[in-house]
Amino acid sequence: MIFWRHSPLGILALMLLCGGDGLADIAGRRYGTIRLPFNTGKSWAGSAAMFGGSFIFAAVFVLLFAALGNYTLANTLPHSLLAIAAVTLAATLVEALPLPDVDNLTVTATALLTGYWLL
Image (cartoon, rainbow, N blue to C red; front, side, top):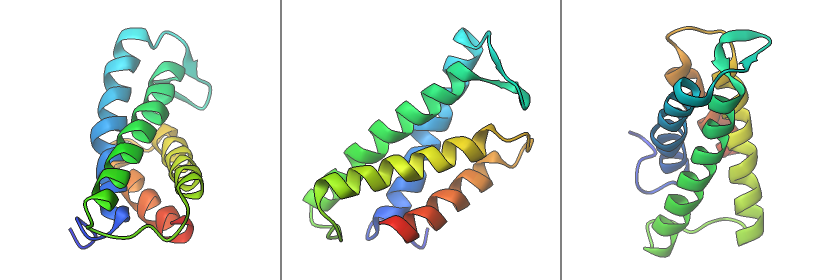
C-alpha cells in the first residue's frame, strides 16, 4: 500500500501476484506433469508461467502508469525492461522454494527489495 500508484515497485509487486502467481497456479495444475526437483509441489510449467505472466503484466502496467504520469522511470526503457525481468526472475525463484503458505509474502518482499535495488 505504501508503494501503490506513485512508485513502480507497488505496481510491479502487485502484477507479480496477479499476473504471475495466478497464471502459475492455472498452468501448473493443467500442464504441470514435470515437477521441480527441489519442490515437488511446484512444476516447471507453473514456474515458466509465473515468469512469463509476471514479466508481461509487470512490464505493461509499469510502463502504462509511467506513461500516464504517475511516476518517472529512473532509467531508459531497455534498462527498465531488463530490471523488470531480473525482478521477475528473482520472484519466480523465491516462489518455487518449498515454503508453504507464505509465497505471497515472500514474492512481494522479493519484488520490493530487488525492485528497489534495480529500478
